Image (cartoon, rainbow, N blue to C red):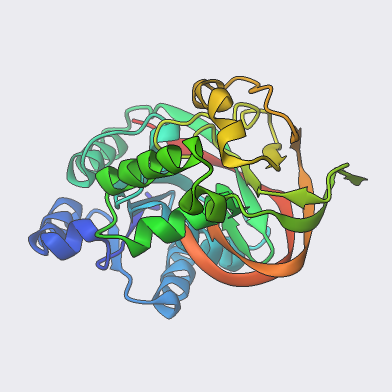
Length: 308
């Protein structure tokens, strides 16, 4: 059998706090699969070339959303026109929004054990399909600038990244938004941009946030990308509002329903081009990137994700 290729990120919080987990992962894999611990981007590309040569059937990723998006970017480049193997998201990072969106739970060790057992017993896998987005020269499931990237900046800046830290930043944002305070006003600071979706320019020229997703959830249980399940489409969103104005519409955003928020545009699409008047930092799957002024976002390959 072609086998299972496992990539884990030793820099993720789970493995830094408990290095022994690296050994447990290696023990679980044993000699029935290829295990690769990646230290840097060069390692990821080397591993991608090795796994392609071995014609692995399943690519198992043990890390968070950032690990997944960086690894898939390099595998997509290396595989080219050749389809990627089935993907198993083992979890293991601080942010596991993509796995959560696919209905994947549990520890990396347990998920990998189940994966290997079912694979070698020829038991059928429960799978789902998700489109990857191509964002300039990178790949991912969630992209955003404006409010989205500023939230992530605050998340990484204040304390150790964790779900409670993210919840605290959200509560701080809501409290500041109630009075249009300086924290929320900074988060919602407008930016001039030209946004073209499916070849048609959106009517607004100023935005507080522009973002997109090919999975339903943005994070913290917010199901904002409710149009993302359309085949070969992702959900594009842009809005420009004052912090306090958006608060009454947050519950519907959380539930994955049209929010009715003013100055809010959204649609399912397979291409969005964003041209900013001034370069802005942005985020892909929770990772932050330096300021850029132009983004071309397209639907990428449709992945088969193993749920269990």
